Amino acid sequence: MPKPSRLLLAGLVLLAGRLAWRLDERPLTPAEQREADARARMAGRRATDYALENIREEERAYIARELHDDLGQLLATLRVDMSLLMQQPAANQATRDLLAGMDQRLLSAITSLRRIASNLRPHALDEGGLYFALQSLRHDFEERHGVACELDARENELILNDRYSTAIFRIVQESLTNIARHAHARHVRIALYRHPGLLHITIDDDGRGIAQSDMEKPSSFGLLGMRERVWAIRGDIAITGSPRGTRIEIHLPLPE
Image 1 (cartoon, helix red, strand yellow):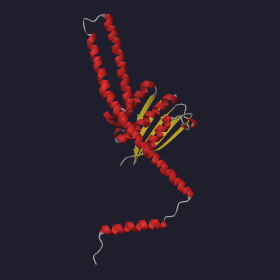
Image 2: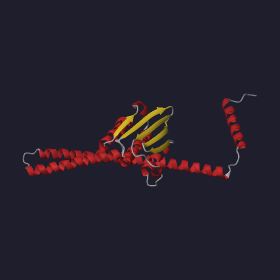
Image 3: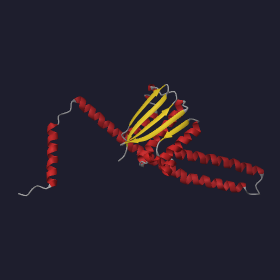
Image 4: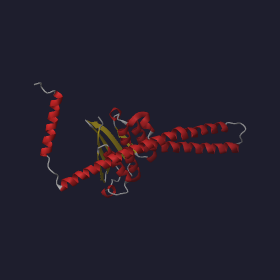
């Protein structure tokens, strides 16, 4: 009688294992069933939130490109034309003053457009990756709010796919927005480092410290958005406040 093949043997072992598992399986108690149902609902909700967030990020990226490529180029061209008109010898002083005012308004429109497009989709992410984008975010935060901000990270440890890079950038961005609005801090430190299979993120400020009641407010959309982004990629987040400031600790599993 011929010997069974390795594939057949593997199939028999797998079948035996499944049968043994089914024989050992016991019905769940009502409490265990409720817990299992709750876990399933939470997993389904997070999967839905992640899918919706991906759709939103794609829409933001599309709108940002359209603003930059179409409207941005149009405004830049108009400003060049305005500069040429100002150089015409036939223009009197009143005309030159009017054109100079229009040029300043065009420059303000271009600046606002770039800011809006950057908020929709950080151009720095596409230009230089996550490390470069975080450095740009840190510099902009210091310039706009006059708060010292330190970034402690290694560029080679932040080479991640677009999904993770965008999520991490948005998390740090939202953290800095909350600090600027509520913390009254003088110094912020952002640290990112790898541990086998994980990326650790800590964001510390020396402000007034977030209260537990603030974290539980339904209107705390910034904190809620941060949590949802972390949970969407199966990470953990902890936010603690004290009279010495607020600390945000995040642990993200790295993609394989």
